[in-house]
Image (spheres, rainbow, N blue to C red):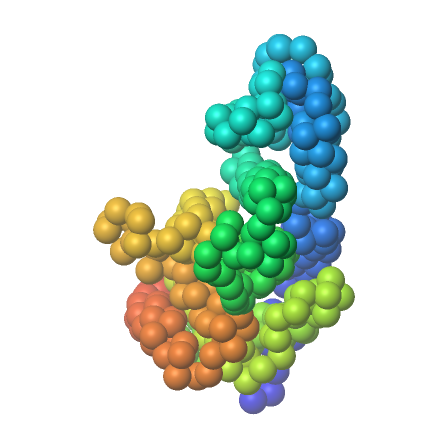
Length: 389
């Protein structure tokens, strides 16, 4: 035990002597967490610039323009009263939409000619485009309903009957799990999970690769002949260091007023098995590729597309089968689905059993491979040492 504690102290010193590792391991989760938290702080997009071509210039068109400007998602930045191609100004003025009200619009409405509005949506970025489309659709739908009801009232129909005739039945939408469409609640879990997977991959990719490069692995092989001993020795410092890091990351949720419960026992279990899966993948690569630069490069190639492939923002069922199989080999895929089931759906241990099983299999397979490969390397190193002596 004294020898183990002595070697453990050396491990901590070696970790903290690597400035890049310390900066990545501690700085990345905190820095990126604060940065992305402030990026998505508003939760939804407001005051997106739109333009209106009002060829009608009547009280009705004015009412539409006022209603568009009153919508929280929209801001009318320009009104043009003659025909023109404002859509061509989208790249320079950054308009998210251009609404064209044709000449004779009001007259056509009152004469039941069913006129048509033209809405050009800037689809270069789907997120603001969807917010803008929904906002414009809500405004125009409300105005349209108001015009129809007023027409019925002028024809002699009482207000209640007019509303009922226009809307013969009601539809109530119950928006579950993020009813406010808060983009922060959607993105922050995925971003933070991705960052911590990257950090664990990078940190653990260096443990054995660095030892082989600077010759320290020979001393470790002589100190103890069992691979399990060295795995515990290498993993324990990172386990100790990652606990406060997870607590800091979880603390971002109350700091940024994200209404997601993360301090629960199911979440703690999910985080634990996810951490071990990431650690063992990193350690396995460190043994397979005993070169710090190459090991980190390969793990970055593996981890970079993990968020996109996880199914968190784009359904995995829409991906090709081969890509789905690759995504299921990555811990982040199962962690984010488990996170959604616990934190968003308020699920239990039973709800995340498939994700826990998948992470457990990844952990077990990497662990067995790592134990076997490390034992072979230790035996080889000790044999060389014996022959040399």
